[in-house]
Image: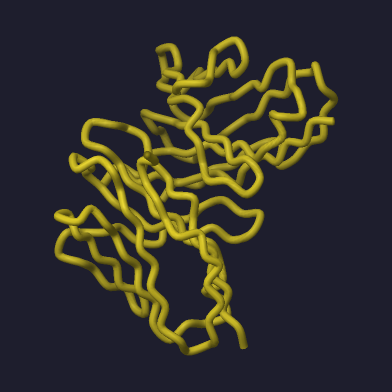
Length: 110
Length: 114
């Protein structure tokens, strides 16, 4: 079983739509959670951390459900510039490296 | 976040040769990481490089194939040795952000082995 699993998509949504991605992780002792964004032929860039209480940054909302071991990312009012691959990332307690999901590809259509 | 640069940005190499990739950070960092991202795949950690000690390699990666140097707190190199076409990949270095163990990535080195 993979450490982190994501629906690979692709998700094709019209501008202005709301889209949600989910990610599950296997190790209940996992400590830190992130969403990264990766544009084509670019490096991953940190989008936001995910906290137990949930957190919001503009049109983006991230939530963590420890009981069910999943993380979600909600994007409201999608923009063309949101088109990218979104990577779910988990750090296990005591580990100093990140476990990456395979990414969910989003395309926002005009 | 730190500013990270990598050299070269891309290269095309013949099988059997070796390539050394450089990673430079604009601030001192304790830990640097080297990842590989094969076409259409997510990132896989190769090794963790700490200044003043041997690099720690992940399962499936060995020092003879991927020797790493970490001469100071702002620089590291990864060598891909005796290359084969299967080594064609993007190689990325990263550093820890420090707050919640998030990492920041360099722009990557796109390697093609023919």
